[in-house]
Length: 276
Image 1 (cartoon, rainbow, N blue to C red):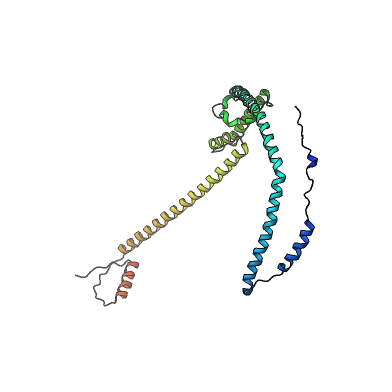
Image 2 (cartoon, rainbow, N blue to C red):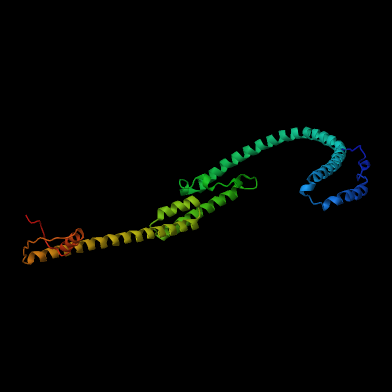
Protein backbone atom coordinates (compact mmCIF):
# COMPACT_ATOMS: atom_id res chain seq x y z
CA UNK A 1 0.00 0.00 0.00
CA UNK A 2 1.27 3.43 -0.88
CA UNK A 3 -0.14 6.75 0.24
CA UNK A 4 -0.39 8.94 -2.85
CA UNK A 5 -1.29 12.64 -2.62
CA UNK A 6 -2.93 13.51 -5.92
CA UNK A 7 -3.37 17.20 -5.15
CA UNK A 8 -0.45 19.47 -5.88
CA UNK A 9 0.21 20.92 -2.45
CA UNK A 10 2.65 23.35 -4.01
CA UNK A 11 -0.36 25.02 -5.59
CA UNK A 12 -1.53 26.06 -2.10
CA UNK A 13 -0.59 29.70 -1.47
CA UNK A 14 2.45 29.96 0.76
CA UNK A 15 1.17 33.32 1.91
CA UNK A 16 -2.15 35.12 1.71
CA UNK A 17 -1.35 38.45 0.17
CA UNK A 18 -3.46 41.57 0.56
CA UNK A 19 -2.90 45.34 0.83
CA UNK A 20 -1.59 45.04 4.39
CA UNK A 21 0.79 47.99 4.40
CA UNK A 22 -1.76 50.26 2.71
CA UNK A 23 -4.44 49.36 5.28
CA UNK A 24 -1.96 49.68 8.14
CA UNK A 25 -0.93 53.19 7.06
CA UNK A 26 -4.53 54.31 6.66
CA UNK A 27 -5.56 52.85 10.04
CA UNK A 28 -2.67 54.60 11.78
CA UNK A 29 -3.93 57.91 10.43
CA UNK A 30 -7.50 57.24 11.53
CA UNK A 31 -6.75 55.97 15.04
CA UNK A 32 -3.98 58.43 15.81
CA UNK A 33 -6.42 61.08 16.96
CA UNK A 34 -8.01 58.63 19.38
CA UNK A 35 -4.76 57.63 21.13
CA UNK A 36 -4.54 60.88 23.07
CA UNK A 37 -8.26 61.43 23.51
CA UNK A 38 -9.48 62.62 26.91
CA UNK A 39 -13.07 61.81 27.80
CA UNK A 40 -14.92 64.40 29.85
CA UNK A 41 -18.49 64.88 30.98
CA UNK A 42 -19.02 67.15 27.98
CA UNK A 43 -17.66 64.65 25.42
CA UNK A 44 -19.30 61.44 26.66
CA UNK A 45 -21.77 61.28 23.74
CA UNK A 46 -19.06 61.89 21.10
CA UNK A 47 -16.71 59.38 22.76
CA UNK A 48 -19.38 56.66 22.70
CA UNK A 49 -19.92 57.33 18.97
CA UNK A 50 -16.14 57.07 18.34
CA UNK A 51 -16.00 53.79 20.25
CA UNK A 52 -18.87 52.36 18.18
CA UNK A 53 -17.13 53.43 14.96
CA UNK A 54 -13.88 51.73 15.96
CA UNK A 55 -15.74 48.53 16.96
CA UNK A 56 -17.42 48.39 13.53
CA UNK A 57 -14.03 48.74 11.86
CA UNK A 58 -12.62 46.00 14.06
CA UNK A 59 -15.59 43.72 13.25
CA UNK A 60 -15.00 44.11 9.48
CA UNK A 61 -11.39 42.93 9.86
CA UNK A 62 -12.39 40.02 12.16
CA UNK A 63 -15.08 38.84 9.75
CA UNK A 64 -12.61 38.86 6.85
CA UNK A 65 -10.06 36.92 8.92
CA UNK A 66 -12.60 34.22 9.79
CA UNK A 67 -13.77 34.00 6.17
CA UNK A 68 -10.25 33.42 4.83
CA UNK A 69 -9.46 30.94 7.63
CA UNK A 70 -12.56 28.89 6.79
CA UNK A 71 -11.63 28.79 3.09
CA UNK A 72 -8.05 27.72 3.88
CA UNK A 73 -9.13 24.99 6.33
CA UNK A 74 -11.95 23.55 4.23
CA UNK A 75 -9.76 21.20 2.10
CA UNK A 76 -7.79 20.11 5.19
CA UNK A 77 -10.92 19.35 7.25
CA UNK A 78 -12.24 17.16 4.45
CA UNK A 79 -8.85 15.44 4.19
CA UNK A 80 -8.71 14.91 7.98
CA UNK A 81 -12.18 13.32 8.02
CA UNK A 82 -11.20 10.84 5.31
CA UNK A 83 -7.93 9.94 7.03
CA UNK A 84 -9.75 9.26 10.32
CA UNK A 85 -12.08 6.93 8.41
CA UNK A 86 -9.07 4.94 7.21
CA UNK A 87 -7.54 4.90 10.67
CA UNK A 88 -10.79 3.50 12.08
CA UNK A 89 -10.47 0.55 9.69
CA UNK A 90 -7.02 -0.18 11.11
CA UNK A 91 -8.00 0.44 14.73
CA UNK A 92 -10.59 -2.36 14.79
CA UNK A 93 -8.13 -5.26 14.27
CA UNK A 94 -5.62 -3.51 16.53
CA UNK A 95 -8.15 -3.58 19.38
CA UNK A 96 -9.02 -7.21 18.68
CA UNK A 97 -5.36 -8.26 18.75
CA UNK A 98 -4.62 -6.10 21.81
CA UNK A 99 -7.47 -7.58 23.87
CA UNK A 100 -6.23 -11.10 23.14
CA UNK A 101 -2.64 -10.16 23.96
CA UNK A 102 -3.81 -8.65 27.26
CA UNK A 103 -5.76 -11.82 28.04
CA UNK A 104 -2.70 -13.97 27.42
CA UNK A 105 -0.54 -11.60 29.47
CA UNK A 106 -3.08 -11.66 32.31
CA UNK A 107 -3.04 -15.46 32.38
CA UNK A 108 0.76 -15.49 32.46
CA UNK A 109 0.76 -13.06 35.36
CA UNK A 110 -1.79 -15.16 37.24
CA UNK A 111 0.40 -18.24 36.81
CA UNK A 112 3.50 -16.31 37.81
CA UNK A 113 1.74 -14.91 40.88
CA UNK A 114 0.94 -18.44 42.02
CA UNK A 115 4.61 -19.40 41.59
CA UNK A 116 5.67 -16.33 43.57
CA UNK A 117 3.23 -17.19 46.36
CA UNK A 118 4.71 -20.69 46.48
CA UNK A 119 8.19 -19.16 46.75
CA UNK A 120 6.92 -17.10 49.68
CA UNK A 121 5.53 -20.18 51.42
CA UNK A 122 8.84 -22.02 50.93
CA UNK A 123 11.23 -19.20 51.83
CA UNK A 124 9.56 -17.04 54.49
CA UNK A 125 9.91 -19.79 57.12
CA UNK A 126 8.87 -18.94 60.67
CA UNK A 127 7.65 -15.51 59.59
CA UNK A 128 4.76 -16.93 57.54
CA UNK A 129 2.24 -16.17 60.29
CA UNK A 130 3.79 -12.80 61.14
CA UNK A 131 4.35 -11.29 57.69
CA UNK A 132 1.48 -11.72 55.21
CA UNK A 133 2.38 -12.15 51.54
CA UNK A 134 0.79 -8.78 50.70
CA UNK A 135 3.27 -7.10 53.04
CA UNK A 136 6.32 -8.01 50.99
CA UNK A 137 4.68 -8.31 47.56
CA UNK A 138 6.16 -6.10 44.85
CA UNK A 139 4.09 -5.58 41.69
CA UNK A 140 7.24 -5.41 39.56
CA UNK A 141 7.71 -9.14 40.22
CA UNK A 142 5.00 -9.82 37.62
CA UNK A 143 7.02 -8.08 34.90
CA UNK A 144 8.47 -10.43 32.31
CA UNK A 145 11.96 -9.09 33.14
CA UNK A 146 11.71 -10.29 36.76
CA UNK A 147 13.03 -13.85 37.06
CA UNK A 148 11.77 -16.24 39.72
CA UNK A 149 15.36 -16.84 40.84
CA UNK A 150 15.83 -13.11 41.48
CA UNK A 151 12.52 -12.94 43.34
CA UNK A 152 13.58 -15.88 45.51
CA UNK A 153 16.79 -14.02 46.39
CA UNK A 154 14.77 -10.95 47.38
CA UNK A 155 12.62 -13.07 49.66
CA UNK A 156 15.71 -14.59 51.25
CA UNK A 157 17.05 -11.08 51.83
CA UNK A 158 13.75 -10.14 53.47
CA UNK A 159 14.02 -13.17 55.77
CA UNK A 160 17.61 -12.21 56.64
CA UNK A 161 16.47 -8.65 57.39
CA UNK A 162 13.74 -10.00 59.66
CA UNK A 163 16.13 -12.29 61.53
CA UNK A 164 18.73 -9.55 62.00
CA UNK A 165 16.12 -7.03 63.08
CA UNK A 166 14.63 -9.31 65.73
CA UNK A 167 18.10 -10.12 67.06
CA UNK A 168 18.85 -6.40 67.41
CA UNK A 169 15.57 -5.83 69.23
CA UNK A 170 16.09 -8.75 71.62
CA UNK A 171 19.60 -7.43 72.31
CA UNK A 172 18.16 -4.16 73.59
CA UNK A 173 16.58 -5.89 76.60
CA UNK A 174 13.92 -3.22 76.43
CA UNK A 175 10.82 -3.27 78.59
CA UNK A 176 8.96 -2.43 75.38
CA UNK A 177 10.28 -5.41 73.40
CA UNK A 178 6.88 -6.57 72.16
CA UNK A 179 5.86 -3.08 71.04
CA UNK A 180 9.16 -2.66 69.18
CA UNK A 181 8.75 -6.03 67.47
CA UNK A 182 5.24 -5.10 66.39
CA UNK A 183 6.55 -1.86 64.89
CA UNK A 184 9.34 -3.69 63.09
CA UNK A 185 7.02 -6.33 61.64
CA UNK A 186 4.64 -3.57 60.57
CA UNK A 187 7.25 -1.45 58.78
CA UNK A 188 10.07 -3.96 58.10
CA UNK A 189 12.35 -1.05 59.02
CA UNK A 190 14.66 -1.51 62.04
CA UNK A 191 15.38 2.23 62.26
CA UNK A 192 11.69 2.97 62.76
CA UNK A 193 11.49 0.22 65.36
CA UNK A 194 14.41 1.74 67.28
CA UNK A 195 12.79 5.17 67.11
CA UNK A 196 9.65 3.61 68.58
CA UNK A 197 11.75 2.28 71.47
CA UNK A 198 13.16 5.77 72.09
CA UNK A 199 9.69 7.29 71.97
CA UNK A 200 8.24 4.76 74.41
CA UNK A 201 11.17 5.19 76.83
CA UNK A 202 10.76 8.96 76.81
CA UNK A 203 7.02 8.59 77.38
CA UNK A 204 7.56 6.16 80.27
CA UNK A 205 10.15 8.47 81.88
CA UNK A 206 7.70 11.34 81.65
CA UNK A 207 5.00 9.20 83.28
CA UNK A 208 7.37 8.17 86.06
CA UNK A 209 8.34 11.79 86.70
CA UNK A 210 4.66 12.73 86.96
CA UNK A 211 3.98 9.82 89.34
CA UNK A 212 6.98 10.73 91.49
CA UNK A 213 5.78 14.32 91.69
CA UNK A 214 2.31 13.16 92.69
CA UNK A 215 3.80 10.84 95.34
CA UNK A 216 5.89 13.68 96.77
CA UNK A 217 2.87 15.96 96.91
CA UNK A 218 0.75 13.32 98.66
CA UNK A 219 3.59 12.55 101.09
CA UNK A 220 4.05 16.24 101.87
CA UNK A 221 0.31 16.67 102.40
CA UNK A 222 0.15 13.70 104.77
CA UNK A 223 3.21 14.84 106.70
CA UNK A 224 1.78 18.34 107.10
CA UNK A 225 -1.55 16.87 108.17
CA UNK A 226 0.17 14.64 110.75
CA UNK A 227 2.16 17.61 112.01
CA UNK A 228 -0.97 19.71 112.41
CA UNK A 229 -2.72 16.88 114.24
CA UNK A 230 0.30 16.40 116.48
CA UNK A 231 0.45 20.11 117.28
CA UNK A 232 -3.25 20.17 118.03
CA UNK A 233 -2.96 17.13 120.26
CA UNK A 234 0.05 18.64 122.02
CA UNK A 235 -1.83 21.87 122.60
CA UNK A 236 -4.77 19.97 124.06
CA UNK A 237 -2.45 18.02 126.33
CA UNK A 238 -0.84 21.23 127.57
CA UNK A 239 -4.25 22.69 128.17
CA UNK A 240 -5.22 19.67 130.23
CA UNK A 241 -2.01 19.89 132.26
CA UNK A 242 -2.56 23.53 133.19
CA UNK A 243 -4.91 24.24 136.10
CA UNK A 244 -7.90 25.85 134.48
CA UNK A 245 -9.71 28.73 136.10
CA UNK A 246 -13.32 29.52 135.31
CA UNK A 247 -14.16 33.15 134.76
CA UNK A 248 -17.71 34.31 134.30
CA UNK A 249 -18.00 37.78 132.89
CA UNK A 250 -20.16 39.74 130.49
CA UNK A 251 -18.76 41.83 127.59
CA UNK A 252 -20.33 44.42 125.39
CA UNK A 253 -18.94 44.17 121.82
CA UNK A 254 -19.70 45.14 118.26
CA UNK A 255 -20.14 42.37 115.64
CA UNK A 256 -16.56 42.94 114.45
CA UNK A 257 -15.21 42.83 118.02
CA UNK A 258 -17.19 39.67 118.65
CA UNK A 259 -15.56 38.07 115.56
CA UNK A 260 -12.08 39.09 116.74
CA UNK A 261 -12.77 37.80 120.24
CA UNK A 262 -13.95 34.46 118.86
CA UNK A 263 -10.80 34.15 116.73
CA UNK A 264 -8.62 34.97 119.75
CA UNK A 265 -10.26 32.28 121.86
CA UNK A 266 -9.92 29.65 119.12
CA UNK A 267 -6.33 30.59 118.26
CA UNK A 268 -5.25 30.36 121.88
CA UNK A 269 -7.24 27.19 122.59
CA UNK A 270 -9.29 28.87 125.33
CA UNK A 271 -12.36 26.88 126.23
CA UNK A 272 -15.48 28.95 126.55
CA UNK A 273 -19.20 28.42 126.92
CA UNK A 274 -22.51 30.15 127.47
CA UNK A 275 -23.25 31.29 131.00
CA UNK A 276 -26.64 29.96 132.11
